[in-house]
Length: 618
Ligand SMILES: [Cu+2]
Image 1: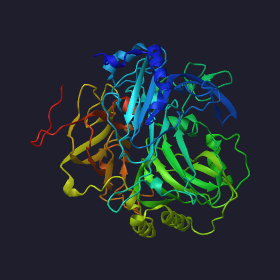
Image 2: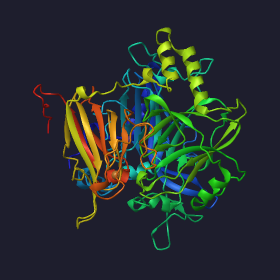
Image 3: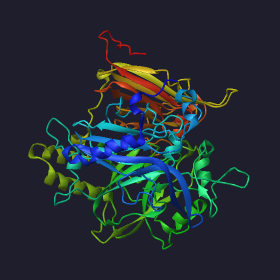
């Protein structure tokens, strides 16, 4: 075990004093966005629909030090939204005020048994920024009593889109994220496309008066708090007077989320009423799956019944939705996956979000009234829990009187987009953008990364997830046959190289996530050899893959409906290693799998000019 670098060993009080001085000077640094957060135990309450009571909870969380009443019991357990523009610098200070923790040194921080629940750090999920030093570095450890300031230099050519942040200290990632430690990080751009360069879709999504269209950020969390039963075990049935918490990895694992009866929250609220919409207006919904333990199949349905929502058990939800929510989900237009604008608007009645995913959708609520937000059922193989989950309600949104849409929503949306392009686009690109929109709502002028053609590929990478349940010593969470080792570099990749990756899982399904550079999906082939990634393909009724061909993402479900290689899918993606060198990680985004070993260290280094790379300092 080597000690962390000295530069992070700055006591909280001293570091805070310096930063407060800096904050007073911030007007002189207009290109900087500052966030100062305590990482500390928060005493809060969460609504429990099963009992129609608020449960008291005590959970590790983010406390924005500039909020007026940061400790109010009603403050939702979600991090503040960070708004930033390309070219700006984001400075996020974490003051770790959690209690001292003697488990933080075990195994050099590399042990694959969950530990160091009071250590933390930060990951800016999806950002294309420097992974080293005080950049998007998840290999640093911020121990209790220590403050550290992250600095994300967002390049001027960074795509505008929906990103997020969360802790990523190996050993406590799942525990902290499932406590509600996550928030949205939105990059807003206004670059006009040109005949040769693509621009930001934000530039197109304007109202007739030139202002941005209405938008909402939906941080979807799964805060799986539990209480202690009379035998000292875990119970999800918290009694009045008890305080819920998340202090053990026994709370994670297959089947624990459905068994808990908890509901996915939106921006920290369980079964909340969202801010109202206006019927017929086009809104941008930025959905972020910041949960750990359940797949979300997002649907919007008319609320047709009159039942109030105050009390609802998980077991009763399916019946409630049948009785109170309309039969046909309202279609909406998906425009971005994982923050990256797609080549075409895809109309969907259901978007599938696995842990870590983001989906940006253009939503039109066609008439005034209430709407149910539903997490629909999914095939077992498509879901984190490998169970076919029953439906869950997520919340209610009301549309106030506006314009009633009687025809197809896709036609309405297409007409709206064409009209927006006529108003917003520069003369030298307006014709191209409008022709694209008339042609199945294509968005080719807004896709941030050019396609990776086969001729550009310079190398290949193979990756296989596995949970090894056959060893006598226990269960091992592995990539390429090995659990994570902090002292091992698993892949050394050349800067400016372009690799084709083949991704598989030998034992159930896992969401693959790699930091820094996103990847383009080339094909998704099932065990029978069929590519199911084309728009309109059929993957045994599972809606998550069709439409992903050529889409750019940073997190992707690697499916295996079974528990041996015979049923595994083979997924091909391509990626460019651009601009940034340094060490970072790839991992499974079922974060308790990551904490237990399903992670690798990746190093991007300079080419040596002979087809290899210059070796690092190790
Ligand atoms: Cu996994």
